[in-house]
Image 1 (cartoon, rainbow, N blue to C red):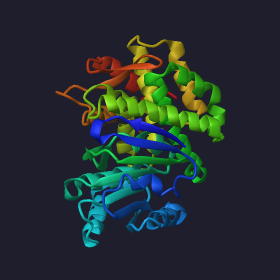
Image 2 (image 1 turned 90 degrees about the vertical axis):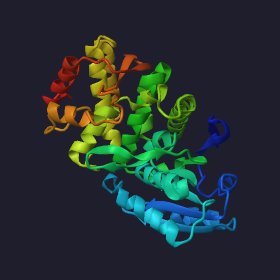
Image 3 (image 1 turned 180 degrees about the horizontal axis):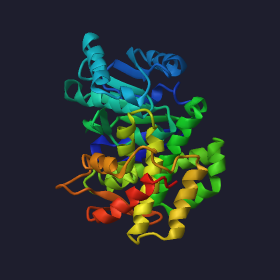
Length: 364
C-alpha cells in the first residue's frame, strides 16, 4: 500500500492506494469519530462489494447501515440526495456519524453532498470504485448534484477524512468506464507534468490492458498531482481551476446530450481536444502539440469529436452558465505548452467560435 497526503492543516487526510484495502477496516477506524456509519452505494456495486465493506466495519463494533441508489449520472439529483438524508434521519444518525461513499464519481458526489449538509456537516470517507473517481473526483472535497440546466450546479466543498483506493475493484470495471478514467489521467499530464505525458504515450497499451505496474504508477502520479493542487488552492480561487482543462466544453456536452448518454470522462476527452485546438489557435501550442494530444486521446480509445447534433450556439449557451464564469467573462483553461496550463478570461469570442465551428462541422 502507498499512502499520499492532502495537506490542509488540521483537515489533512490520507489517500491510501493499494490492493485488498476493502477488507482493511482498521484503515478507517482512526477517521471515525462516532460508531455510526452509513454506507452509500449503487445497485451495480452493492452485490459486489457492500457485504465485504459492512463486514469489515462490523468487525469493529460499529453500527452500520446502508442505502443503495440507482446507477448512472441521470440519478445524480436532489431526489437521490434527499433519499440519503431521509435514511440518516429515519435511522437516528447523530452528528458524529460517518457517511461512507462506496462507488464512482456519482456516488461520491451525492454522498459527499449529503455529508456536507446533514446536521451542517458530518464525517465523510471516500471509497472510489472507478478509475476516474480514484484519480480525480474522490480527492479534493468537491461534492454536489446536477441540475437540468447545468452539471454540478448544486453542491458544497466538503473534504473527506480519508480516501481508500483499492485497485482490486478496477478488475470488475467495464471497459468503457475504465477508459473514461484515462481522460482525467491524461489531463494531469497536460496541465502539470510533461514527463508523465511521455510515460502515458509510451505505456498506453499497458494501461489499457490494466497492467499493474503501469496502472499503479499512473494512479499515484495523478493522485499526488491533485493532492498538491488542492493543498495549494482548496476552494478553486486560482491554481485549482487548472484541473478543469476540457471540462467547460465537456460539461456542455453532458448537459446537451442528457446526463448519462456520454460518460463524464468521454465528454472531458473531447473537451481536452477542443481546449488543445483553442490553445493552438491562440498560438500557445504548435500543430505538432495539437496532434500529439489528439493521438494520445485516440490511443486511449476515447472520443475526440463532438456529438453530431450539437451546434456552436448550443455550446455557447451552455458554457455561458458554467460555474467558471466570473463577471460575465468565461474563463477557460489554455495550454501554454504541453505540461503547463493557465486560466484565461480574455479569449477572443471569434477564436472560441472558430474552435466550436471546427468541431461542430465534424472535426475528429
